[in-house]
Amino acid sequence: MDYTIVWSSEAKENYREIALYLLDAFGFVIADRFTDTINSKLRILETMPFIGRQLDGLTAVRKLPLQPYNMIYYAVIERQVIILNILDSRRSTTA
Image (cartoon, rainbow, N blue to C red; front, side, top):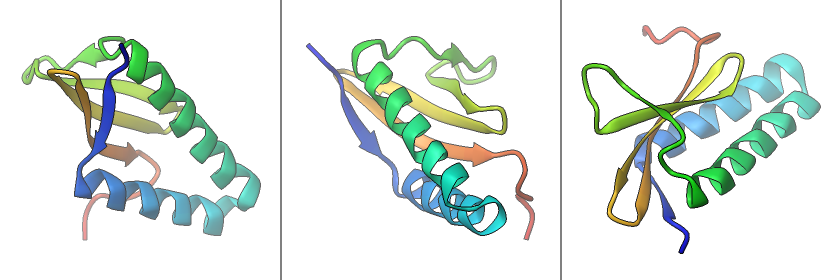
């Protein structure tokens, strides 16, 4: 039985911001590739949610690389994969 993917509001917003950044900075092809990669990784997480590496200081949270510059952070709770955040290392995290 597959796990259900659930997005946090922060993860949804970061996904949107990363996609818009990629579209603006690199064009449609790269932004579309990012979306395809996300969808592919989510399909994997539905069947193999423990594939990501546990964080050292917070073992309930796992991380999974999406592309060279992107990382997805998630937790597995019962039969759900909670997408906590998606980060892009090319973008500044400071205001």
